[in-house]
Image: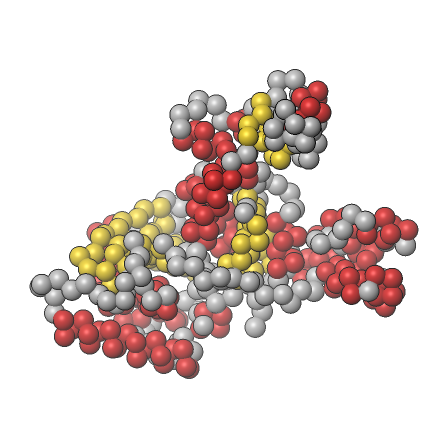
Length: 407
């Protein structure tokens, strides 16, 4: 199965996050819009530039040079100290947003993440998911990211380093000759500075030159590192996304429809399919939800969403769908063409025991739990689509579910 990998890289993270924190605490100046840097202690000779604004870059300021050198180039430069408490906060905000898309996330650094989307696309394309993440980070978190879209970690990482800021780039295998091989050899991921001059002496100046070099020559000169360089130059990378399971604060899924739909009955069928997948993931996490949210996007890209707090936390597909369906009926305007529909659950709890109100039908709840558990077990054993709820029987003709959604 072809893997579906995203690499999300925050643009100018330290400066952007500092700017957001300052604005949050009443600053009237957005330091992203002035000549500014994040730097070390100027009283020490070791004080260097850690991040710079575009205005500072235009003055010639470079990352890793001393603050003293930066001030010579840019006399009006404003210097702000680093604050890793702030950086961790915004890094965690990003991580929680990404958890809505997949449980398999590798935090490569404080401002970079790899996402394995292989089993989480739900009739959407990897590129669309990348664009959606790019947009949501900007709108909901206030900073920008580059997103690399590819079939392995290496190519996703290389893609996210293309033109910045606030961009989404693909680097699929067919695009390697035009997009990657033309780059200078120094741009290849994991290639050390000491190696570049040695390759130049071998007349290897571009990534394409390296890709076309006899692998044995590289192995003889560089050993195992030579093999890795040759494989990377040819876009070969079989490494897995190394993720640690962390409990999400919310779980959701949405689907861009292959055609606009203005029939609410058909929208309800799709909503049931989405709810089933969301609650399946919820139960796999051994969590319960207290809030249900439904999102709609019209053909004119107008977004609306409604949410409802539940009386009792639950992971029941039937119960959550009942509330989701009510929200859909409340917000949908008859005849409006819909191009995207989504459902998510929030306010999650680790509590294994469902809190039953005095007015709840305990027997009914227990029966529903057993039914959901039985369905989950069949899906895990035979594949996600082995068993289908009657309410969404017609959806498969409209939405071509992919094999990667089955796990």
